Amino acid sequence: MPRYLFIVSRRDPALFELLRERFAEDENVEVILDRRVQAVPARRPAEDRRRRPEVNAEIRARAYAVVTLP
Image (cartoon, rainbow, N blue to C red; front, side):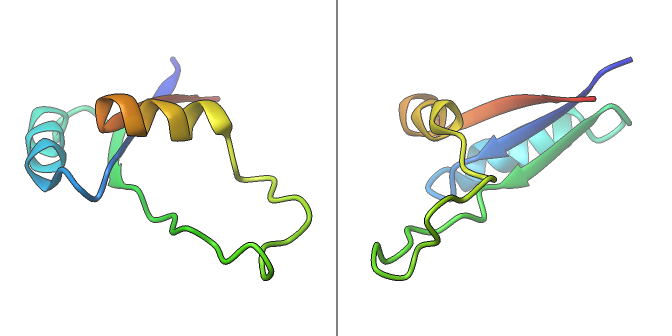
């Protein structure tokens, strides 16, 4: 069974709490606050393998993104 990771914008703590409570009993779902911060361009590595442009866009548009984990 797939697992799901909800990444919630830091700007929406109420949504984070709502989703965390909603999925508290579901072992296949994890809800976290977006921990990423804007990097200073001069200090950012040439390639950050953890960056996913589609996740960034979803968080900006909806305040959360859902990632399917293996």
